[in-house]
Image (tube, rainbow, N blue to C red):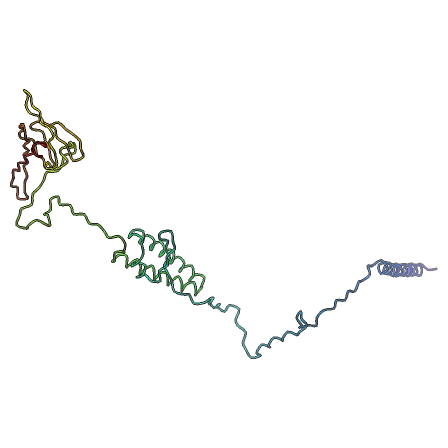
Length: 284
C-alpha cells in the first residue's frame, strides 16, 4: 500500500472518530439538561381592571401635532392663589390676629419698642421667603410672601408716625430753671440752689415742714430739737443749714427758731426770705 493511501485512511478514521465523539457529547448534554417547567397563570384580559371591566384605551396622539422640543422651558408651578396676609402676635399669653396694618397699630397691646422689633423681624422673614419662592418659581408662595412684605412694611411705616394705644403716657414737668406754668408771666421766677450731695436729712425737706419740739440752752447758747416729716429727731444750733433752699439758722430763742434763706431770681436779684419756726407746744 502506498504511503499516500495510508495517510488518507488515517485522516478519514480521525474524522469518523471526531464526528462520533461530537454526536455522543450532544446526546449526553441533552439527556442531563434540566427539564423546562411551563407554568400557566389565569388573569384578567388585557386592559381589564380588578373588577373585570376594560379600561378605556388612551386617545391616540394627533398625527400632525409636533412633538415638544427636549430643551423647552418648563412652566412654573401654579398653586392655589394665596389668601390675604395677616399679622399674628401673642399678647397676654393669647394669640391675636390682625387683618391689616392699621388694625395692628391701633389695637395692639404691645409697647412701641416691642411692636417695632416684632414688625422688623417679620418683615425680614417675609423678604427671605419671597426670594426663596422666586428662585423656585413657586408663584403661589411668592404671591403670599409679597403680601406679607407689603403688610409688615406698611405697619413699620405707621409705627413711626403714630402712637400705639394703651395706658396713658404720664408726663413729668421738671420746674428746675423753668417758669412755673401756673405763675403769672409778670412774676420773675426764682432760682433755687441745688441740694448738695452730702446734705443731711434736714437739708432735703422744705423748712416749713420741719417741726420744733424742744429748745434747750446753757452757757454755750441755745439748741433746738427738730423733727423731719418722717418722724426723725435732730439737734441743731445757730448757723447750721436747714431746708432744701440753702437756708441756715440765724437765731434761736426760748420759743422760736429763725431761719434765713437767700433766693435769687433769673435776673440775678437776691431776695431774703425769713422763716420763723415756733416751738411746737407754743404753736398749739
